[in-house]
Amino acid sequence: MSNTPSRVYVARLVGLPIFDPQGDQVGKVRDLVVTVRGEASQPRVLGLVAEVFGRRRIFVPMTRVTHLDSGQVYTTGLLNMRRFEQRATETLVMAQMLDRSVRIVPTDVRGTVYDVAMEQARTRDWVLSRVAVQEPAKGFRRRGQTYIVDWRDLEGLSRHEPSQGATHLIAAISDMRPADAAHMIHDLPAERRTAVVAAMDDERLADVLEELPEEDQVQIMERLDSERAADVLEEMSADDAADLIADLAPETAATLLALMAPGEAEDVRRLMSYAERTAGAMMTPEPVILGPDATIADALAHVRNPDLTPALAALVYICRQPLETPTGRLLGAAHIQRLLREPPSTLVAAALDSSLDPLHPEARIDEVAAHLATYNLVAAPVVDEEGRLLGAVTVDDLLDHMLPENWRDQAVRR
Image (cartoon, rainbow, N blue to C red; front, side, top):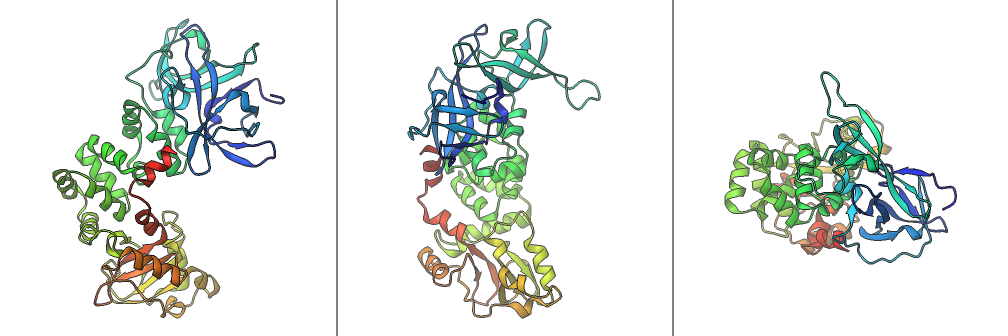
């Protein structure tokens, strides 16, 4: 491996792009696979866990890695695309070593692992050589003292540690997209997953839950206490929360709905009242809604909200009062492209697409798909018989319901 640093820290590798010899990106680094041979022997690095396009996780042997540093990874390009399956003799550094409780033998200092370094031995094999350890915070210090120590000077990394925390793994996945974090959490051992879920804040957990297979969602929710489970459901989009609650035991679902904020629970109950695979069941009840007196500047300010998906930000719905679903009568919708072409002081009502036909909540999924395809839309309003806006169906809502029920599970298993 020419031009490769003598020592590389693993946490800095996660998320880095992997390139073939022609410079084309073939995937991203997600973890490091090692074999642990005891406290005294440095673990040998077997290879990388890489996520290739299509979210398939594969194993890349170190013999296929030609260049490796803190900015990029190059391979020979000859990769086996078979899905990675962890063996009993293998350990994942990010998933199973970070946050492990350890003791620095020469000084008897105790702390947790927050990073691990690997380097090439004389045999040209890569081994884990150094471990970054952090002591618990003392007194008024926000962070405890840190140490970089030799692997051989540590006790606790070669055996299973049931009290392993999750602080540093949470930090490592904090910049990942929710779907990528979901894939990592899906592959964790049960005890490790429980610790990670406990350490995540409610908003982040809600984002990740929306990307997990239904079976994982249910298992995680059943292990949370009821109060926290209700808080997490409130942070989820109403349509995803409704789908998840429908998968829970009836008594559990009733308990959580009773604990949720009344407004959030009302939205979920309303979505659950519609037949499956209809516009009403899959719609989002909180699109961007404004009154007819709003300006273009008002509309643009609302669609800049980073919490909106691109599809939800594509249309602004203009309604009579009240402006919360079910609203007053829908007057029309304004496309973001049209808004960008108009002076900011202009009333948004002047930019309405009055020819946009709304959907009704009873519309079947094939009718919704045909409607979006016919008019080249990424979102469409859903109204009741009186023309009041109930919500909006987006193309991502549609895909979630058109794909097989276990498509998320297939995505992480491919």
